[in-house]
Length: 204
Length: 204
Image (cartoon, rainbow over all chains, first blue to last red):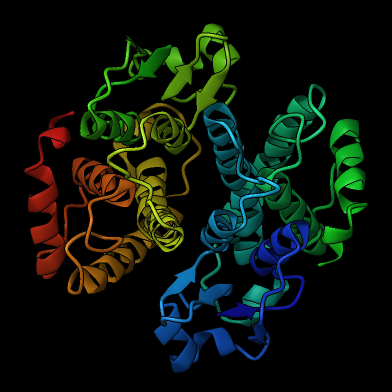
């Protein structure tokens, strides 16, 4: 098994590293440099036609790409502690929060990154600046949804730490990197961020 | 249990109906009219703050929103036939394809819908027409990824029908509704579409 990884600040490979750290799983790793555009090399594109890290190659050659797909594979092999939910209701609630975070927080972060950031402009990506800017208030609204939820529960999908917290943490830290730190007027989200950052896994 | 549903052409509520039909599950249903904007009513927003259907309310009051979260809850209650994968590798591969379809097919379809379609313009949604148009070739590239995969396997995530096929089918049918039918030069995708449409569940 080989885990194709990329260093921070890339948020998606970090999701898997945090997940593995929470489970105590050691992943044999090969680094893929995003700065050197190695993820777009013909060799890597043959593994994952999306040309993105992370990807996990199994011993039989099967490639599982997409961070959450890799985590779900690892969860099936190492069920405890459960990070996707151990009951039908927990499985559903955690999946709901994963999707909410990806659609109302990660989505605007990605659009701000691709369409407004000097780094992606330098790469010659097609830039829709006005559309990118329009995503800044959308991101704030997404954070607001999390703030409201975290006023009621210790973690984003309920009483227990889950994969949804990992998605939110890596998204928040990447947003901070691109110039969109947590809003100062969201105390529950800020406190949650300190709490999940204090876990040893967050150093991954 | 109450399933808050909306009629076609809404793609997301249909995902759950097809899923339930494949499993033989009967869902007690309440219709929410998107045309009448009932999903934005205070009553519905209290159930799902995203103001979107579908949502499933359990007997204890818990609400599971997001179509795939509902399906995952139902899969945990009714494991056979498995539509999310019955082995670790199948779980990972199916999740990978769900994410690929949502990011490279559904995402551009959603942007074309929101930013170019006369219906959404009429609703006064903020329109970035140029950005919407830019998503048409992205959608084609997304379909191309599916075409390449379907040259090798009968269903999008492998030899067996899965939730990934349900996501792709509902996306393709919604894309057709908004004026983006399947490209004529993708025979494997076209044949796959005929095959999954022939299943009784597709009438849902």
